[in-house]
Length: 250
Image 1 (tube, one colour):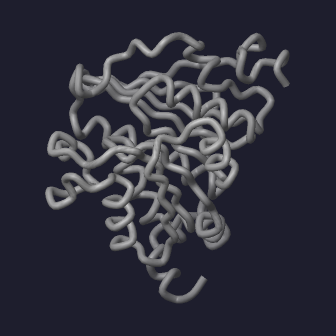
Image 2 (cartoon, rainbow, N blue to C red):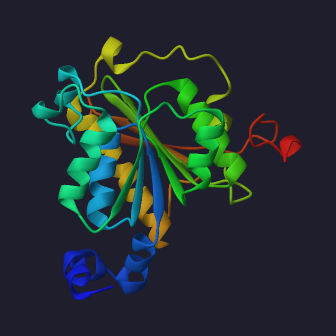
């Protein structure tokens, strides 16, 4: 770490839980962010600012005017541009010392498995059940920790799934393998500050996992009620019969 890096990250290095060793772990880390929308925007910005050495951005969509109410990594001038291009340019302007790689496509099957295997941690910031299930399966197969967040209307939720730990559930343990019947933001609406809150919490969990401090949300589901300004927590257990991570499939 050079003098400029020490100055850039000095406020988090001052934390005993991070220190020089934790900051170096962040600089050495590679992270995949799936989705550069309302959740992925704060996730990418905070992880770039924190000094994650290599950020892999995946999104097949382009910036639309209706995105700008909540997807704060994009600007008016980015309308029509691929989201990964817009996001990469903003992140490099924020922190030119990190490396940013882009996947301007919907990762699936082999491309998803390869993208997950190339990183140390994955953040699912997507907006549909099928993608979340596929990302979860790829993370379980590669034994890569997954930070999963979601927000709709005035409700949000967040959890961490880490298949490196024998007692950790996976996304499918919690939600099953049902059909994608959930409404999207375009159908049900969502507040920008809510996705900003969930995305910021996802970034916090990622930093904790990568730097190696604190208690991640493994085996716990954080539920956010924005209408009543309330947080609630549920315990989540691994399902031995889960078709993705269950003991019969190990």
